[in-house]
Length: 211
Image 1: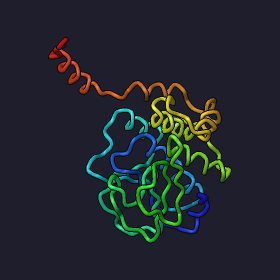
Image 2: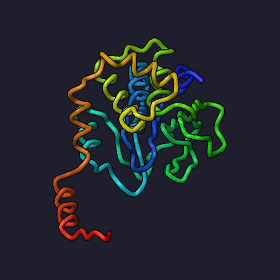
Image 3: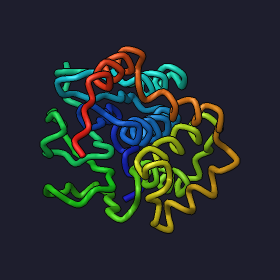
């Protein structure tokens, strides 16, 4: 499958899994940018019970102006719905109707895949898959999207320590000097809020050790 296959559709929705993590947001945003650049009407959404609340993810969305929307329903049925970092029909993906379904993912296949699908189960992140698809299209990766995709890989491979697939390494090499290292470091160090730190502190005051 190629990203250019999506260009046959005009009204497109890119969907991340419920309670999206950095990789879901990053990969979905990569697909969104490609379609937007091609003049398509496109939305980036997620559903489920919870809105994005983690400090690092809110910072990611706000800093890079990622237009991801929390929705519980779609007013109109899109021509195409593309799930990123998940598979349509899975338990962690709110189901929305669409004329056509496409899947981009890196997990093990858990559902019946549509004809339009690109699932590379061996890769460390869905951001890796989207990076490769964008490169195939000759899409220019500026510093902004390079940083977002790099962060998706970074977070889904435990700080790059679980990066083993050759394609992950190719992406790492390609983006090594093109991403904003200061922003990556900043997001990496903001995974706990002040309120969460207070809760942890109170909990630690009551710690007991049984030899």
